[in-house]
Image (cartoon, rainbow, N blue to C red; front, side, top):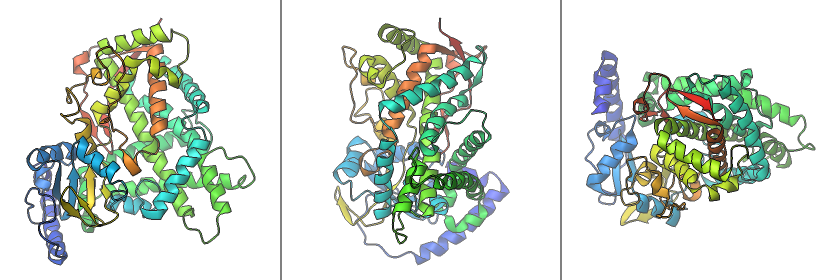
Length: 498
């Protein structure tokens, strides 16, 4: 009922609902007829509203999981007048994204991302443009050191700046958001070739814009714009997002112009350089590496490539402050294996099973990115149902990470999910925070490396506590729904370890 409450709580909402009903009626009358009996089952939609009355717009994933209890692992749901198929649970998601990877590989035209990227870039493009851009991006990132020891050195260098900033608070409270700086800087190093000083105006501006856009992307009215784009004139969040995105584009274009000064012929030191060099080598008729696609590709990595890892690190520190017994056990293992002074290597995770299990459990429990829609690239028969080309599909990752058939205590923070009876680390097939298949997160290897190295380095150097006067039990681990599931704005204290 949260959808109706949102509208009927004020006069403006009532007016919006009236306009929505009129616009919905127009589209309902004009929609094409579809063959009956071919779609998965689902709740009966109301006229114009669809099934929105059953959804919490801020936690659609939890609402969809509730619906799946009645209709099973594959069902149809109506977001207003838009029909989508939802897949829940590990088995259904794996069957679709792995066994039928090519058929589920496209993206549907999500209105806000159509306005931002116009079908360009890495994450929300489809077809040959997506395949070419993704392949080039992965190759370029590998050449720049993603997943290699060279990048380990850069991450640990960045940690030294983060540690200095934390120490400057001398044990006094500081915002969790501070942990955004280091992972974001590692991504910017790959994108632009240099790290930023934390006080650099461009760095501060980019952090602010990323934060503001991510918050707006989680707004209920932004979701309504995606459901009813023809009523866009009534909603504000998407307009604000477009203004802020253009500010980011200006910065990206400046880096592209600077790159043109030494490309071709110079050394490739960044993803921007690699794109500009590729563009200079391609025939003028080649459209895959146009300025528009280059800007869109860099923009994708500036926004999503920084948000996920930095938010995961915030969660990690919050959980350590809330669960001191877990933090102490991690530190005991680190002291025993690494000692107080040796810098970690990525390979150390094999010798740190409990620490590795804690990191994995944090990522499982918070379900950072509940879902990103896919669409059918061809007409497909799946589990007895016919899904026409272009059908929007939601592989619900929350339902995988909280699948009762895969996890002993899915709704509890429990590092033993990743440990056997002897305390050895155990990989779990249902651990899919980065998704799986053709659309698996392009930065998965970088994110895993950063998360491990930053987390271990921080726990070696500091012990984290709630601010004075706040108990561990008072720390809030309920998520704030933005584009990702962020922790609520809170403070922590960091005490240097002797």
